[in-house]
Length: 258
Image (tube, rainbow, N blue to C red; front, side, top):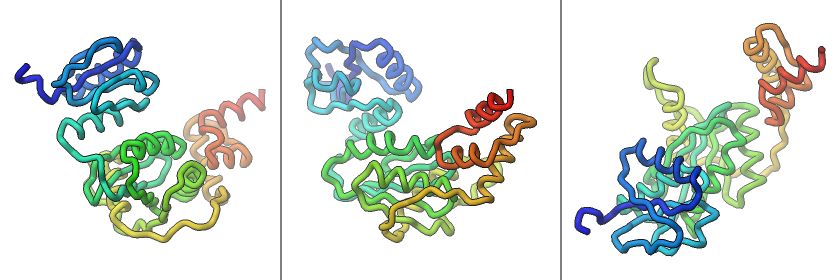
C-alpha cells in the first residue's frame, strides 16, 4: 500500500453526510477513501472523517466527528499535516459585526480562520473548535467595536462558555488591504490581530440595550431592503437583539398592516 500512507477516509452510513463530505474534500483537492461502519479501517488510514452521531461506532486512532464539515475538514488537514493537538494555550479572536471574523491561535500559531454570518452563529462554531483542543487553557478575545453586535457576541459567550473573556481595543486591528480586498478577509485578519492583543477581562453581565442611533440605522436598512417599509422601533429593537432577522421584521410589519 505504498503511496496510500497518510490518507483520509470517510466512514459513514448517512448518504447526506457522505455527499457533503465528498463535495467538501473534492473542493479542496484532498484524496480520500470510503468505508462503511462495519468495515475494518486499514492501518494506513491516518484520519477518519465521520458524523457526530456515528463517532462511537468508529474504531480508529484519529477520528474527526463534527457537524460543521468545513471545520471538520480543517481539523483533518491539520492531522494530515502532522500538527499537534496538545497545545498549552488556545486564544480565540473575534472581530464583531453583523458578520464576523473568527481566528484561533494555538501557542501563538494561527490554526483556524473563518467568517461567520451572524453573532448567533458563534457558539456552535466555537464549541466545535474548542472540542478539538481538550485540556488547553482557553482565552476568548472580542474587539470592542461593532456596537450592539459586539454586545450580542459577549452575551452569547457568557451564556455558553466557561472561559476567560477579554474585551480588546480594536484600534489598528483592521488592516488596510485596498479596495478590491473582500470584507471577509479584512474581518479575519482583524480577528487574528485581536487575538494577539491583550484586553480587559469581562466581569459584568451583559445586557442588550441598542442605542437610538442603532435603531434608526435598522429602520433605514428596512427601507433599503423593502423599498418602502420602515419597521417600528419595537421591531428594530428585536432585530438589534438578534430575536428577529431584518427580513422577518419587514415581513412582520407588512403582515400587521394588512
